[in-house]
Image (cartoon, rainbow, N blue to C red; front, side):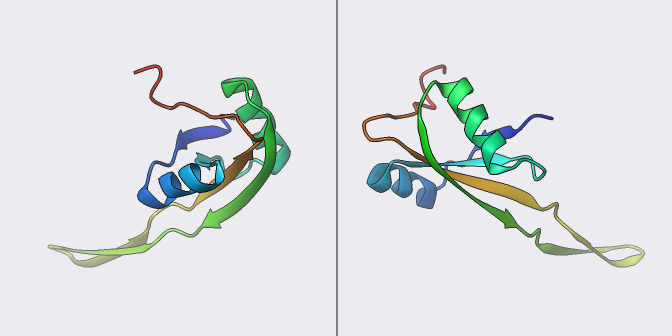
Length: 96
């Protein structure tokens, strides 16, 4: 199971990073906080102070086809907001 999927790089997540030293990641929905914390610490070599998680429910989508209206749901996902210890940072753009 791959715990970390990708970092979330939205305006809201970026403002959290700049103001409060918090980073947001999209995670596997089966992962718990301890697994997420150890994955961040091993991958980026930083000390994690706290982990907050949330499950985002997928939106309903509808589209019109020849056979009529088809509705479905986008897959749910889990987001983790990581707070790092003072003075530590994660640079996402260093390996580009």
